[in-house]
Image 1 (cartoon, rainbow, N blue to C red):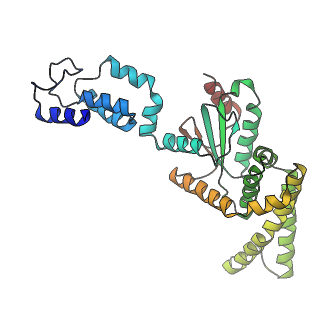
Image 2 (tube, rainbow, N blue to C red):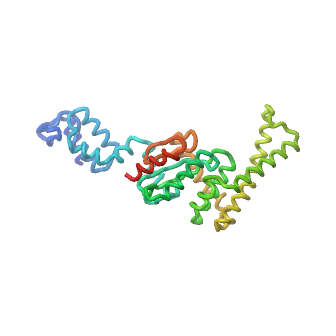
Image 3 (cartoon, rainbow, N blue to C red):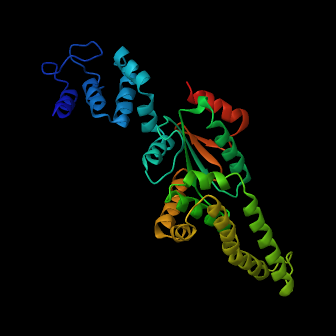
Length: 302
């Protein structure tokens, strides 16, 4: 093997058998293993490249050819040193994720979000607007459903993912990702039901008694799912979806696993809140709209 041979040469520093080093010496004795760098390039091992280049920088071998390779392959270097870039690549290659905008776009924006998050809604509204513009034609937007605000967030995410199984992920996502009057109606119905429960059971909403607060919360969770389901059914029907199939898919093991996988990704990226975005391989905390989004769109067009 060429690589093993070069390692032996570097170890023995045998000038009689060593090949000429790129640093210009007849036989390299600096230990930088420039030939090993060539092998790494051919093998496409980005991390090995970074380590080899680092060794050369410390010694004598960073010549024009290596500098040129680094300049021409920034993506490989980024993948080697950035966990965000590696996970971004993995997410983009995962066929279970849905893409909005240009599905073949090279400028990838990944968004971890919750449908009940106000800042997420502003980001989603901004993204929907700019993706309709010609200058955003290179953007691929990958929404990653990560419900963190309780049962209502989870049931919305389940319905949107289930709509994807009928080929209408985008339609359902667009219908609920920036807020929806029917979902507001569901929240109002839940509020009234909770107040009636409190009154009927003579509970004090402001009580410091943990058991009282747990009773109120448990009842709220109990009525949330059916009330949101009513509204989501109505939205889905308006989009021409098969509502019965949608319900079945929404509660399937496959979608439960998908949501669990999304939460695992969020944990790997140490997502502390939503929205959290990875923009072209770089982590971006907080919402993205207005001038900040315009800047990203301009960057995508370069």
